[in-house]
Length: 138
Image (cartoon, rainbow, N blue to C red):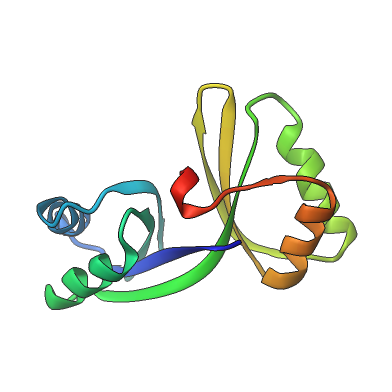
């Protein structure tokens, strides 16, 4: 139960993020979540979108470098400490989190995780009855 995340590689230049967002919007592709990371020379815009295949196609047709990656998205209570409990389950099983980002919606927090071992991560989360989201539940 993974979802696809897009990574768009952008040079650090004013307006580049807006070009991605404008391109997606013009093609009726909704962004459910995103995160921006940067280095000195470029940024990585990570996106969860409504239509992955269409987004890859239109972004590449506009000369954006795009990569698709499987990630885990889970939902937990939006209260202090709830994420710590879940991350402890993963740490006890030696699952390394390469990166993660989150977005809250009222009483729930949705967390996107890129673990080093996707299969084992899912097994651990399922064993602890964690609420793993599918694309249609975002």
